[in-house]
Image (cartoon, rainbow, N blue to C red; front, side, top):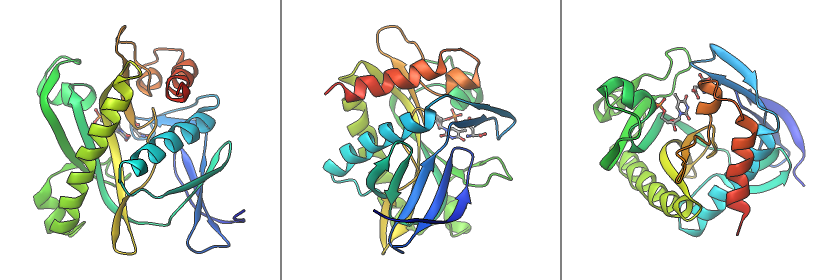
Length: 236
Ligand code: TMP
Ligand code: ASP
């Protein structure tokens, strides 16, 4: 078992530790939740445990479909081992249904289906509140090469196709989600986590929100929603 060494980084929802193996980092999922650039703070009981389980499920599913991810293995309730990545400072959002900031920006009602998936890029900077950028900014600021961006686009749409089908079979609509990427030995890989913190998941039958919007919008039953997502994923 990889030994947990120095804390490398502490974010809003996770801590990253070095291990005795330079080829492995340890991710610890916390119960802390923030929204609106940290302006709203709280804890969601057992969120860390559930996001570790849900991310493991999604990363394994994606690996089975040929998507390279940083995931190596889950080691205990709140921790997983990952490959260290050189993080690309571009957050990639994929949208299938209008919600959240897109609804606001375009004045469209939440729940409007998009005729084809929409890809958006945000500059990964907490100080700036992750402003939206496009391919030109990415090339001009040299955040990633054109080849890297082509790979990222391909992976993002592949992830969307795989997760859309998998979740639909479990009566969940994948409304939108955010991905982060990094480079490990010249290969682009999916990093970070895939969980109800980073996706919008709506119950197909009731339209009930099963994701972090319950926390952001004070809808209540946050813990139950995360647990229900895991229950449906674990159902097979
Ligand atoms: P948005 O509608 O607020 O732009 O969010 C789009 C998706 O990205 C949604 O599934 C939630 C996710 N997201 C994050 O994972 N982290 C963030 O900081 C934000 C703002 C959104
Ligand atoms: N995680 C982000 C924050 O802390 C935003 C969000 O997920 O809504 O502000």
